[in-house]
Structures are given as C-alpha cells and as structure tokens.
Image (cartoon, rainbow, N blue to C red; front, top):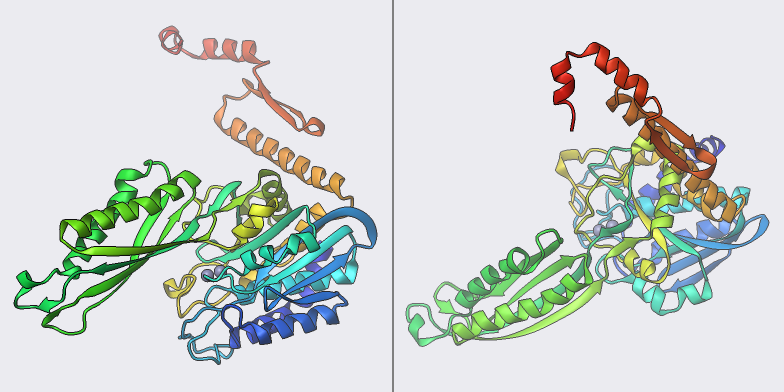
Length: 464
Ligand SMILES: [Zn+2]
Ligand SMILES: [Zn+2]
C-alpha cells in the first residue's frame, strides 16, 4: 500500500523525534520544549497551528485538496510522568524524576508522522485537526481544552485517539464499542482521634485502628454494594500517620482512587465511602473529614466511529489482528472528556510483549519503535483520516462499514463451513446490501444422506 511505503521512508526520522522527546520528558502543563518541537515540525510541514491551547497544547489544521464539509480531530498526548527512569539506553531521560513511562512520546511522534504524510498528499476532502494535548496524566489537559472551547473553534464530526498497549502483540489493535477505559476519581479521608502514649492506649483514641477498620470496610463497596457484573475498584493507595514507635498519633490521612464505568455505580461509590468511614470512625470515638473529587469520566467509544477505526486497522493488518475480545481497562484516560462532547473512538495499539514485565508507568518502560514499524501501526491515523474525512467523505465512511460487514460475512462462512455438516447449510450473501443469512436449502438432501448413513436408532435419538 502506498501509504505504508511512504511512511516507511521517514520511519527513521519518526524514531528520532520519539527518542528526542523521550530524552527530554516534561510533565503536566510544563511541556514547553515538547510543544516547541511539535510546533516547529508542524510548521515545517506547512500546517498552520494555534499554540497555547490549554497552556502548552497545540492544534494544527489541514484542509484537504478537495472541498468537503466533514472534519475530524486526531489527538496525541505529550506529557510525561514524575518517575525516575531506570533504563540505560542512549535515549533515556536526561531529567531526574521525569520520564515518558506511558509512551506519550510514541503517540506524539506517530501523530507528527501522520500530519507530515497528510500534508504532503492532501489527498482528502474536508478538514483534519491535529490535537497535541498537554497533561493527560492526572491533570486533565483534555478537559481544559474542552473548557477553552476547542470544539467551538474547531468544529469536528468525530475525534480519534489511541494508546500503546504493552502485552498486545505489535501489529495488533484492540477496540470495542462502549466503555474502553474507566471513570477515575480520587478521595482523601482525614481521621482524627486523640493522641496518647503508646503504652497507655486507653487514654487516647487511636486513629490507626480506626483507619484499619475504614480500609477493611471499604472493601465491601465492590463486593457487597456493586452489581456482580459491573466493574468497580476502590483502592486505598496512601496512609500517612505517626512519627515514632511509642506515640499514638492524633490524626492520619488515607488517600485512594476509585474506578467505575456505569454512572449509577460511580454515584453510589462516593456516599458509600463516606458512610463506611463515618460509621467506622464513630464506632471508635474518632471523627473523619472527606474530600472526593471526580477526575475523568469513562472513555466510551461510539459505535459508528468504532467501526470506522476498526475497519481502518483491519485494512492495514487484517481482521485477525484487530482484537475485539479484550475486556475494557480500569485505567483511565482524559480523552474521555473529548468523547463526552463528540462521537469518536479510542484504540489500543500493540506495543508487543512487556519486556521484564515493564508495563505502563514502570521505570523500565519504553514505547516500542518496532511496534510503530510494524505494518500498519503509524499509518493507522492516516487511514482513519481517509476513511472519515477521506476521498469521498460520507461515501467512503459508508464504504468502510460495508467492507467490514462483508468481512464479517466471510468469517461467518468460515465458521459455518467448519461447524455445520457439509451441504446442510448454505450462506446466502448479498454484500451490496450487507446482508448475510444461512439457509437450509439443501436440508432434504442432507437428511437423506444422514438417514442412509446412520442406524435407525441413532437417527431417532437425534430427534428433538
Ligand atoms: Zn499513563
Ligand atoms: Zn498514557
């Protein structure tokens, strides 16, 4: 495919951009050098840009060579994490305590590659906006972009995002309609008792014992209050209290995070935490104060755009390499804030086997350049662009869906041939109408064959 060939030409350059970004990681809203580099490259491709969107974000906009009303946005995140990198390779982080441990360096490089290719060819109708957002980790750069009116200034029909996914083989994609990633909230509980000598606990109120009761009690939110088939997580991740061996402290602080998909489950969790913490503390004579903050909504893919992204991926790597069977992740993603406003899809790109079990956010993690070299991975975005805003606008979008349906028909035929007795079932396909059905039009022949081959009693036992 010409797209892949052309991308392959500048693959080494994309890897260079990626390594440079990896060596100079910047955390939320401080992506100044990163932003400068992205801006410089986009301008060198001849793409007009706006800078300073959500502080350090950039939006590049590209018109196709043919007129068209549709517009889409393709998004990459640019921020790193407050982690000290433990890798020794040449492009390891040069900044103590900061690291691209989530592969956003790869996302930025891939979207730059897509922008360069599309700017060279402009072989599409409509408009593509390239969103390079800051602060995906924790601080909600996407939310700030939405609050600043990004979609009012850059109206789009759909928005697409992606994330590298360790453990998924390079050259594979995974996507599903509906929730892909969970809602992400945080909580902080301050428990206050009465400080005392550790040898005279009866003279105080021990906030550490109260915290133990609270932590145990919180485990029942998912096990006793959540529908067994709904996903939810309540994790206490910090306990800060006490200074020495022989003092019962006056107070301590618990912090943690919750995850959920269903809005009703999310609405249930906050009051449940409060109820359990208040009750446990009161039963021991302690008091509590709680802060609960809703951070990111769930990342929910819309069905049509999921099909578009899946069709684009399948076009490049084949249907068998587009996984639709993976469970959603309880991880979170602020791309959700874009998906709250616009239809769109978020897709995982295989990063290959996790080296030494280094998953996302591990100090040994690195985006896999080989994954981005695998056929189809970087051109993914170009293909989405061409599917949606592409050659024939709406027509192409429909064509993509039709292609996908035809492929499903082929899969069904394969399954049927494998599972059904020969000659008994026949696939009646009308691909132009995207209609497939199995007909038992040879049933009489098949029945006769069976009767001929089988002893009478077996035939009778086979009746319903
Ligand atoms: Zn991350
Ligand atoms: Zn990430």
